[in-house]
Length: 168
Image (cartoon, rainbow, N blue to C red; front, side):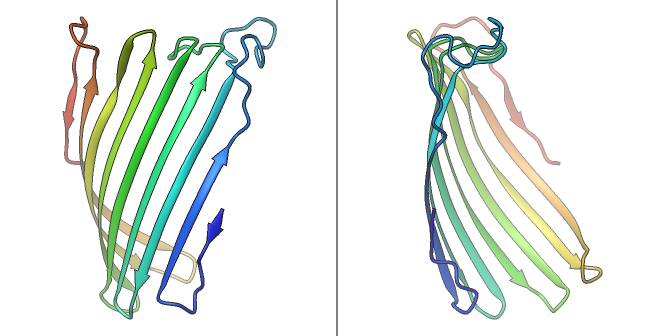
């Protein structure tokens, strides 16, 4: 993880790569033959940037990753490869010493590829929050969240295609 984080500057960045070093050889990581303990390998790349001044802070971050399952799980068959990418932008406005307003937009997509079939989900959300410092160690936050997501089904697949569009 490389980082340009420095509290004395008005901007910073983060660059990261992680390979969790899993072994997707069949049977590795399977305890007592249980299919509930899969062999998993995960790696991901992250890139972020932030800028601030006296009243505003802006953060942008992107993540792209892959997980391979060799042993199978209750929700992923052996040989499944799951790809995810997500990004967000956050703007925070400092109203005074104790209060701020935050607006955030997120976008995500995750696909699981098995033998000739792709499934997954995609979506986005808006979040609006009012933040209030109530003591040196505590903060109150009131948040409105509006997610929208869709299931990705293989062409011609029988099943329920769900579309979630809620305000929380």
